[in-house]
Length: 189
Ligand code: IMP
Ligand code: MG
Image (cartoon, rainbow, N blue to C red):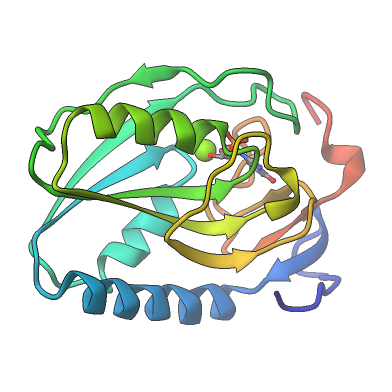
């Protein structure tokens, strides 16, 4: 992981962990790796929304396999920086994934509860294969054992925002990923 930098450009951030250029470069590499691994096979992408939206939209454009996209919405943090118990499915899949190669994509792997839940759910639908891709991995925070097949960056145990990741639905539109200032980590700030 790149060294943290303080930034004048993003006053809401304590530091920038990953710049826009670094994200772009890594997304391109992940796309190449996925393209190689799937060797022209059709892929059904499942994005866990809202967090994965920016990552998925950029990553999809790096993969020229025949592709279908579906989204699943999982309950969120609700103005907190710590996961509150069990995640729930708020909005379910619409595509049939049976006998399809499914690539499940999320913004960040933290306690592992969200991806463990969604993977279990997808496996029940009998896909031909299931792989998981995350942009960020906070390895130190796992509460249930879970490893992704593709990881963009391993990051320390800090609450981060930007490039799709939010705090209380804000900051998703920052082009980089950074550590949110502690004084802004309160509801309504
Ligand atoms: P998990 O179920 O604890 O692995 O959490 C996964 C979800 O929590 C992700 O999809 C994110 O939406 C959210 N999350 C975890 N860590 C962060 C963070 O540092 N910033 C913003 N959202 C996070
Ligand atoms: Mg999320």
